[in-house]
Image (cartoon, rainbow, N blue to C red; front, side):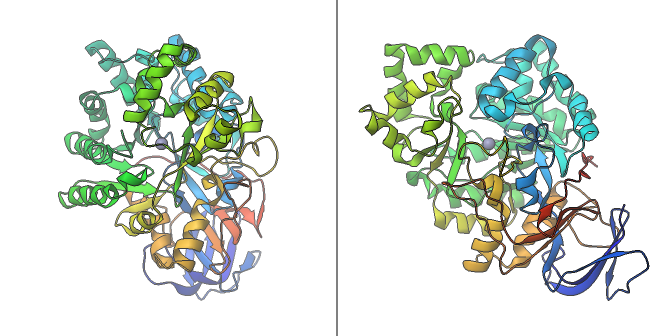
Length: 532
Ligand SMILES: [Zn+2]
């Protein structure tokens, strides 16, 4: 462990309080002193030159659990200043795997996350603790806060079928959640638009989340609807918190599709009312007006019952295709979709589609958007991802300012060169945190720098009860980011996403320099954090 003195820093301590000028000493992985400090012998020092020093950023919503096994250095996250990522989100975690259903769960995850998931060394783990042990043994450059995914638990016990869990199945699922909590999970996540999470009733979620609430843990949710059913979906998440005692986080908050933009404020009001009621409910967002997920999510829920092979057989059948079209126009994720707003971000089996929108592809081939989509899903075995544009920029500003709103990338730890620099993924994996600081702090002045940093550090640390992180204070873990507030910016775009953010000079994780003078050192001092 290094002992380091950071001189002349503009300290934004994560509490939301005004910044101040000081020196900071780090020793043995912790912040030991703050003030006007003397250089001691045998100590490295950094002249911050007045740049801003903040606690490392906490990514409240990450899928890095699927990228860390193949890219332990998590480059695109560290170049944003992220030192801790909350993983296991949207109901999807790489563990536990249960022997009878292991193959089908891995196949589903690989279909969902595409190339990344297919490169994972799945054979290395079975239980939740095996997976965390694997990360620790290999070494990772960021800290992680693991969650277990409800979708994975349900798929393991009930497969990809609809319907209620019987009491034996419920007992098994509760036991799996309980075991994951024992083995290090902070809580349970759900993804209620994805199969099989989407097949779960509110009552079943409450019964399962009781296990989480009893231990005073967390329920993080990709809620059941982010468009026309947004308000019901927020109400459902709040109800689950109220009835189980779990602390609730509404993930990647948004009101999608223009006709629903007025629901954003109403949904925030619901959260506010729950907070006033004394419930622990908060949310996070990424600062973009496009979302991103697997292309197959556009299909109605019934098309996913029975798993991917069943979905493919629906797409082949002309009568079923007609039914798919009708249903997509009237309900669910695809309702109100405009094909020119759906950008194909990855399609490894047909890379020529990447970077084009569906309207372009359809008109080139003289087909309707629906027919092009169905044919392309068949041709690529459902392995296509998309970004879809449909949020209001004005709402984004309002949402960012909202009390309790935190920041999450909803992304992966990627690298701008090598095997992971493929496709044209949503720029959020590279740009989320710097974009908040550049666009919404420096340019638009939606937040003060202190407030923005608080939402990235002290606020999420308090939510997660990480008592020794999220603030620059003596005794806290030395997760730190030194950045230039005048030049920090995201450079990743929808057209060219594989570009690191700029303006981040040094990043320390547990006292070790992982970014040193804007370069990744390759060190892996990250840890699997423990719940308190
Ligand atoms: Zn999600």
